[in-house]
Length: 340
Image 1 (cartoon, helix red, strand yellow):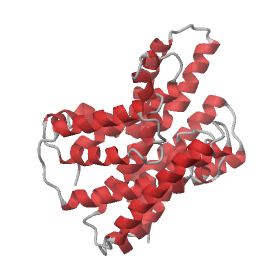
Image 2 (cartoon, helix red, strand yellow; image 1 turned 45 degrees about the vertical axis):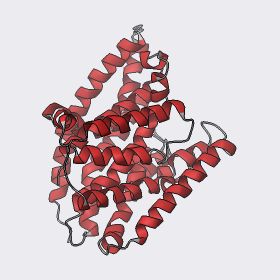
Image 3 (spheres, one colour; image 1 turned 90 degrees about the vertical axis):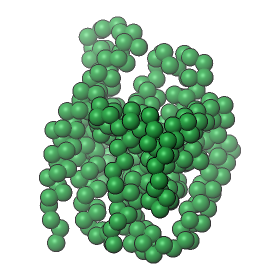
């Protein structure tokens, strides 16, 4: 089952994160209310995690059993090549690298160690968390989802509730600020994101059992508006899955929709932007570092908004290049390797 219209939403989340990292005097940070959206746009990673859990079920729900080794090979073929490219580009951009940091990054373990989560190409922290999700998914699918064991619904919801209570309590009473190990722990530690993958799985299970297309355009607009209003006006810690209360209905409604929005999101150019969104996400920091270094050394005084426009053009071209000449070829090649 391929849900074309959901692909474009990955691009929207990726660009929101890019803007969040760009910061500076960009015009969106000077507009009342709009600035509140982009200062919290890192919750786009939470959307990625929930969507990942959803897509895993959609991709494998017809399987009688998942072959773990084959699954790991295919998943690594999908994300690992660009994950490494991101690291190499970052090392070129900063012209330095620590040997232990490289080892941690290559093994995808950085998010498990507070203080090291953002080593090298720091968007890679989320891929470190994805590795954890991929590690446990064959077990979840083979021994829980296939057996239709309903306890996972209770367990996943309880894990989600416990995570939200703990994270918001931590941020209110224990948080010591950015650039601390506590910041790394509450934002990047994989177990605190498990709830997002699990509820994404549940959303996928619900979807495949209740697949019935209708026109949900207005419902999608209302849910998306609720997301924006919540981010702007309700001061809670959304980073670790709290926004699932809106993200899950949004994902399901978009996936079930056959209205005008689906026709727009399914257009080839928008689908293509969704396809290159992983490349956009994983290489945007080194591309930004290189651009700012070049501007500094050439003493070019460029307005922040113009700088962002130039950056996005370079980023989109670079992401398209990586997708066509690195991600797809390596993915196809690695998937052909047989594991005995």
